Image (cartoon, rainbow, N blue to C red; front, top):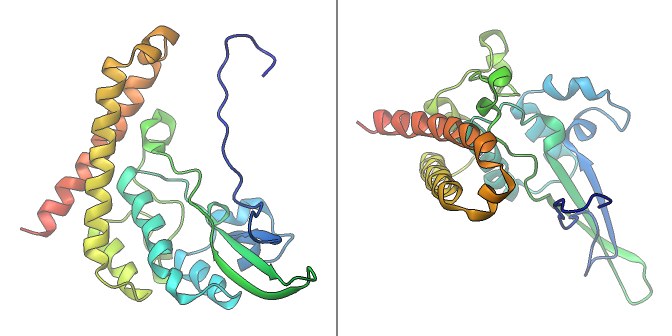
Length: 220
């Protein structure tokens, strides 16, 4: 960075292979539409159709659990921006000793751009970025725990309810840990971030607490 005493975040790229010679990364919007799909269309796809498009383009059905976890996590943490371009499929080409591609395999990329959008006043709503099912389009994008579980069952996820419950619990624990770290973190205090960050973290915690409550209600 060109600025003194500034911080940078470095992330390893998942679209550059180490043991695989060629990796093509295609996001969900392009898989569903085409390579020239307009960005604004990323919200106009149901999760159901997005999943079907990924299967048609070669994604193994065994990736259904990972796909469902992304949906469940977005709901649990109040991420209202999990749109089609925040899903990516990696196509990996395996080469032989002559550097010729012999086989291809595909898988979902690591998750990215997961954030509690409800922590921000201008985005403080309970709507998800995508409709779960095509039948939901007239109803809007506001869902409860039972809807998430039913979507998982629709795409053949076993123990969908247990998966969502685990995600809620893990998200709650992680947020509590973040609150504790922020309250005692000398680095945060020294940089003056605490005052700005704490309200956002508390807002995220409140969102997840509401999910914990809905989970408890469902099991009563």
